[in-house]
Image (cartoon, rainbow, N blue to C red; front, side, top):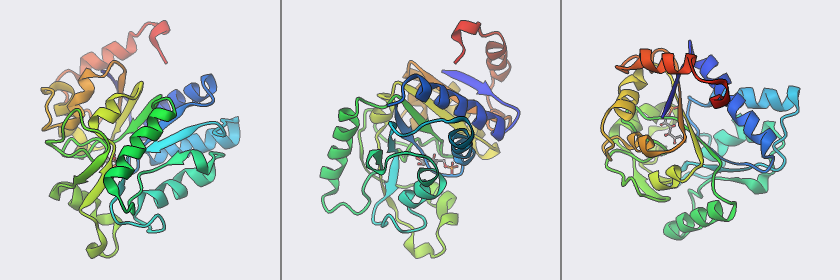
Amino acid sequence: MEIIIQPDADAASLAGAAVIDALIRRKPAAVLGLATGSTPLTLYRELIRRHREEGLDFSRVTTFNLDEYLGLAPAHPASYHFYMRENFFHQVNLSAARAHLPDGLAADVPAACRRYEEQIAAAGGIDLQVLGIGADGHIGFNEPSSSLASRTRVKTLTMETLRDNARHFTDPGEQPRHVITMGVGTIMDARTVLLFAFGPAKARAVAAAVEGPVTASVPASALQLHPRAVLFLDQAAAGDLRRREYYRWVHENKPDWQRF
Ligand code: F6R
């Protein structure tokens, strides 16, 4: 794991955007795995800016989002279809046909989950997966106890995640308890993983994921087994890391040839 601690969330987001920019310029038909939530909003804003001002071209890029609420229509303002359209897709030149999210309204959910995995494989696999992390250590919506080998499927959200995300629903009765999410195994197949975590509420989960044991109780800890997982943290999210001075030292002393 590579731990990059930045002065604040904006600096961490900009550093992550530069990695994605470099990938797309190197490989214009790159396959990106995308996340929703508060964490990647600045990352998306920076990618949009680079598209508008620096010619970053998404026309051949393919995307797969991590998750979607079960039972929410794409037009629902709390759906992840809606979030992606508003915060990213509609502001870059990404082809709608190449922007994928799990279908929260699928009639046959297990078949839709299998098809999602097939679509990822048919696209050649995910080059770079963007992740946030839940306060309970989830990645995607792989809540604690998720199999570390899991594939796209339905998960039941924890009470903690439901509470954390309740702010997105004006009518609490509309908040689904179930989601379709890529599995931990799906995420681990991505060739590069960038995880972003900001704020003190994430510090405990980050420390458990980085310095705790690899365990299904902290799904993000599976990233310890990933050959190319990079964590972009602000000071607060790095606050519980026992070896944070070492991670800073590593970053400062990284040989040029090893930098992104
Ligand atoms: C979102 C997702 C989740 C979030 C996580 C953090 O697609 O898969 O794992 O990344 O819940 O959410 P925020 O960024 O809102 O704190």
